[in-house]
Length: 201
Image 1 (cartoon, rainbow, N blue to C red):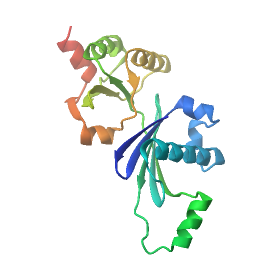
Image 2: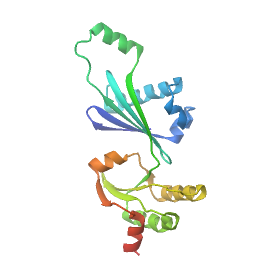
Image 3: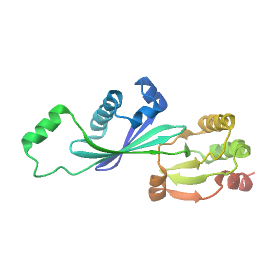
Image 4: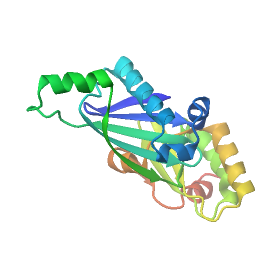
């Protein structure tokens, strides 16, 4: 489980499938309100507080993004406390450890991998190029190259081969498309893998 602060009132948590499996949670469980998911959320908030000093009191907006090959990204945004709420009510709220949450869930088919080294990105591109109909988009974000692919009509064996190669050279990225478009830099907007293979032989 990796946690990073995006702003004073917003954090991003990246959960791998191993993180979920260790806690007995299947990917589809995140769409339901079950005790294990509540326990996981409490654990995430405890870790966010201890690592980043993020205080989850007050209303929270929780966005859950399911990524096919990587796991899940959870973005938690803290709202403002009602200044007119009585301190007694606030104490009760804390004592029960109840989070007032508005949860939105999104599923993405995008495969997203980060590469520190351009040479690794080139090597990957040459291996996966024959597997792809479309070559995805390449971004630069926080000193890394991030390749996002949409596996359109990809057969299961080719899909697994694609993930295996990407995992060998890069690391699964939890950065969402919205974050890349807002804070990253687009290097190759269309057909990135094929463009790289064409220009760097």
